[in-house]
Length: 79
Image (cartoon, rainbow, N blue to C red):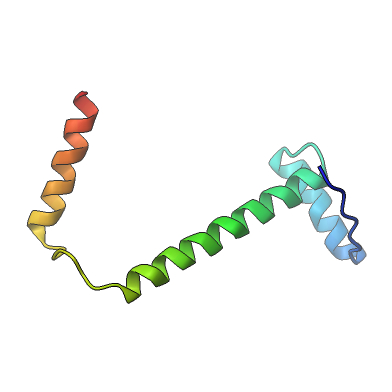
């Protein structure tokens, strides 16, 4: 694992320390890693949403479509 040192103003350092304590992180590094992971997830989701928005619709999202999804979920629960 690589090491990265960052400088924070005292107010931000205090905020990070509070978050570490309040959220049960062991260290500030764990907290920062979690923030970075969440940011990566957001970026990936944004990319997928943009990709979906640019694609042509494949099926109408009507009552039949959603009932089909529900049926698939019910089938998977029983297997």
